[in-house]
Length: 268
Image (tube, rainbow, N blue to C red; front, side, top):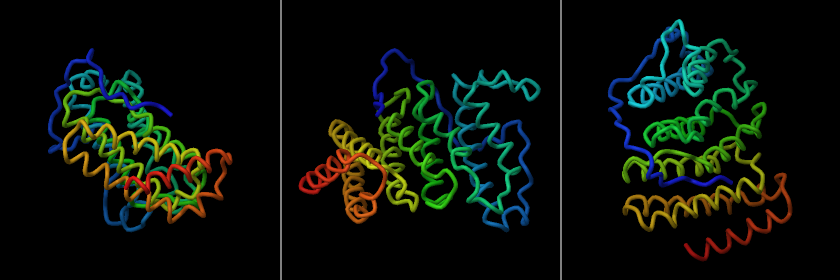
């Protein structure tokens, strides 16, 4: 499991602008008429498209990333993170959205997860990417019956628990930590949580517990949210423990999970 890098004194603060004006970028978006959003598949594509635009908007308004955009004719000069987001936006409406469960979730999750893992992005950019993944999980865009869902859920847990971001101020750092808690809790509340291995469930518990400990030196809001999230996480896992126990994983990880849950329940 990766580590949350919370301090990087060698990096200068990055100026961020407000998200009041949503960026539409240079890539053409398909028209959002009534026929587009009439089916659930097209509605999901529209939602993911809006999340891509939100991440690109924050990156474009960042003084470090504003110079990494190429002209429309020279998009190959874009940074790889920007290229993957733009590529996703072009591909979204070319998929067969009438059979959304047949679409590999990693195809539309990967660009956001790459931003979350990158140590080049600031806290505001990472926060928007985390919010995008949280929305996809909370809206149950995919479930346990979706193709390649196991790989997608494992990719989400691996990316979020190894989150990297540049700390520019305490407030933005706490905001990202709260979003990390939200995404990990959404993973366990999702219908697709049944495909998580015991190792990944342990990783989620360990990461949330680390945030609770780190919150002791942070603001009161993060302390309250982290403790409440831990309460919800423990209850959620206890309810689903019979199903979680049947998931693929080593016996040692299951024993570790059971002891950890009993210990956490005693603490809270």
